[in-house]
Image 1 (tube, rainbow, N blue to C red):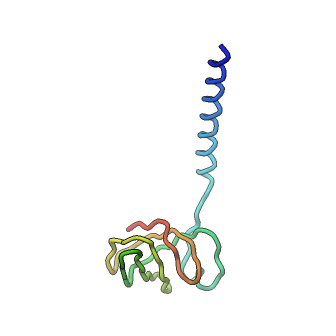
Image 2: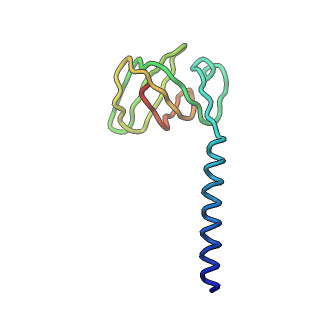
Image 3: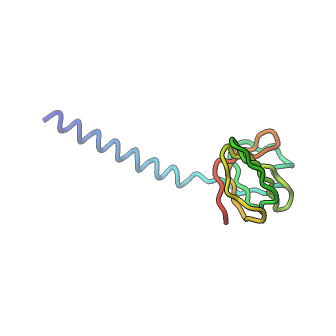
Length: 108
């Protein structure tokens, strides 16, 4: 009987934790920003930028792209990207040492 109660209690706590994670994740937002704001301000944390691909350079270990919307910004991904010049992209990543390190990239 005690084992049954322990299992039910464990399942209840696990379900409560999952529901709590869904609620917390819906409250977290990543703000879109412009390239000009990134260049003019010291930004820490994750940023999202939309723009047009101006230049793509790829190697075996990483890809470097230059995007423009108001200004230019260099971004690096540590894998090969299947992008072309003039593609519209939305990039989420961290801005470090005047380069955006890409976490996710989507064509829009």
